[in-house]
Image 1 (cartoon, rainbow, N blue to C red):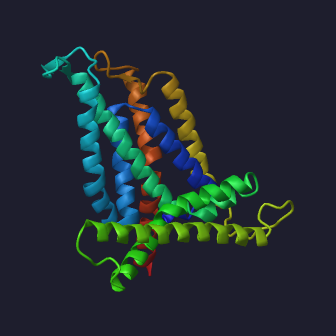
Image 2 (cartoon, one colour):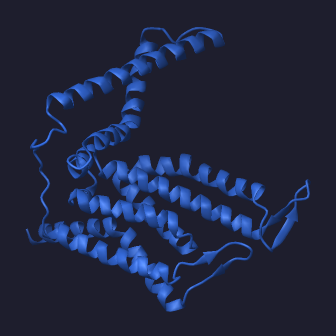
Image 3 (cartoon, rainbow, N blue to C red):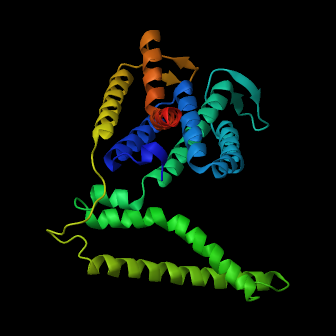
Length: 295
């Protein structure tokens, strides 16, 4: 699961997602936002196929449109006035640009989290933090798994109720009663599942001192190279950001800061950081093609 990058060590996966999520919320430079959204979308399509395309078209585009439209309605800062609303507030070019930037940032973060859910499974998270913060890591792992499992179980319960004819009926009262019945079943299932999980982990001695655990993760040479590359890129981006390479202001006027060479170099490194999973996938596909060609 997760392709070539998903087969890396969990520490490499976690460091990567921590970096792209932090930089995705920090860097509001338009090129950075395009890089973040573009690479996250490409990787999401590579991981999930048509589901990612459907999610982007039906979920991300409307969300970005709503965010971009609402920002100028509530923010009236900016020096470039394009139009006046009936209440007298101005519509400025800067507020529109900031709304588009906020929409792109939100879409990029959601796409990165969708990739995170595909790659960082619960066993990886427990492997990293199970000994350090056992209780919190278990709760966080269960919370991450709860939404997709709840959705799957909801479809099962809903289909079962339909087969039993419990959701049939005329009038809004019948539909409300059926929805309440499904909700009651789902709440009961969620509580029972949480209790069963807690009892199961307790019976296995989870969190006790000296407890050993099986792990199939090994830190190999590829993980060393990937971790070293990620560390170097993160340090360079931090240094470049502190020197103003990604400075970009939207108010009162749109302006970019930083020197041209440093900004170009920082943008290239940021692209390499975000595209690391795609680069690993391409490298692995190239190796497989060369092996097949030789055979």
